[in-house]
Image (tube, rainbow over the protein chains, first blue to last red):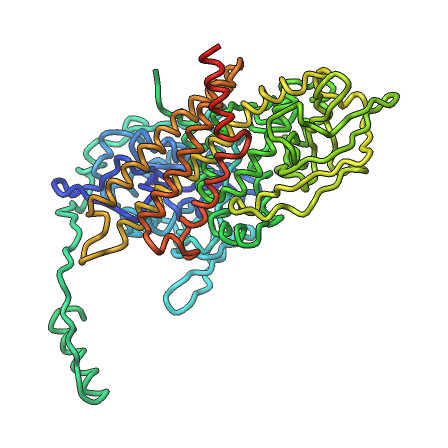
Length: 262
Length: 373
């Protein structure tokens, strides 16, 4: 099986801090990691490769330091790694990101499966996987917590709030995975050193992808971020709603509607 | 002059931190409570090839340097000082072989140690002494083509764990060192000592009753054992310093976390200068210990005599660990004195640092000796 894994390097913390002036994430002093669910995607790719044979290519779009994330992927067992790195890619929204990733994947040639994490720690949109599938005209299954492949058929358990669905699709396809799907392996020191000393991370920019600079990055984005801010929490006020159960329910509903919360 | 890790070293630290947080931190309190490292931890460490990092690949080692080893032990110690003690104690055996072993001894003994299938041990200390070769009472008598060892050793890290021990015993012309398989007849251990901290590290007494070993298991030359010990212990202090650095970092993390999360008069106690001063002191000392330890790892990789620098580094790192865990406990107030908070364990774990591999007073003697001769 030829599997492509899309992964992103993200700040390795749940304590995201914003620059109050620019509204952007403060990354200095914060260690960077492979987005956790992307690591699950990579682990799933490696498990499928161990079962069915084949090749795993890790692809990431990011600044030069994202190469570290791809080296980690190579250490885990990916066969190849490609970093999409170009100043023109800066400011990409999820649409521009999926366009850039999709263009790179088309250049790679034939594949059986694309695996991605469902969402990232920093952006948290969950949009890139589905947008990428649409760009590449692939069937997609999202929020997969279990995947199995038999021949050209992929079956997955897709999680949703009340339980899970059993889905089936023909390959090639795109699947986004959740952290429940597996526990990613940790490479040995030898594997880490080999990833730096013996393996190559290919770096592609706009010329390699054959795209115009205006079709990617900020110019290629359909959405633009207006502002990111942390909401201020003021001192709360407790209000008791009294009466019968019915009165309390109706009273609560009215308050929620009043505040446009429902 | 560069003071940063290479990209490979950053990657190793990243991966080791994840391993420690995922596999060791969740069971660290249990290890402390039960005074035992669960058996399934060892295969995990073997899978990552953590038992032979700086040794030649032809002997099954990783072929890397002491810098990588120190980073590994540091991250392990942050999660579980007991597991880091086991690793630090283990490494005394392969370093002995690397420095003094014949090619035959290295080929015979290093692969099992480097793979982690055998856990290493170094046994010098006895009930009467931890540092004085004149007070050693364990003897090795030459009998034909064998030596026969009789005696006992005290407070020996990893003594009960299957593998290989480097045991110091008196021969006709002084103290000598011998390679002993821990599963051979005559070698037995006591129940591990019930320790204040580093619980889970298997520190026990060794009893040697007519332990017969071939002459080929003499390490180095007869009578040169004490000189060998002072040199190889210097390498042991590299690893112990890394353990203590990890403990210090964990104490800093706990102090910061507690200060940010705990409020007084509606504000985090991190806003109070008294707390800020404690945390500033902790970080200052931890950072000084960090760069001394990394520098010592660099020197160890260069070869040469590191006895002075290792004494200096270990002295500083051990007193740092004691001091910063105390300050971090102070940040926690009464809660730090309970078993509900990690700092209580760190405080107990740190104290061993000023005793293990030469008490602080001996480190001072070593440092002064090289300055004042």
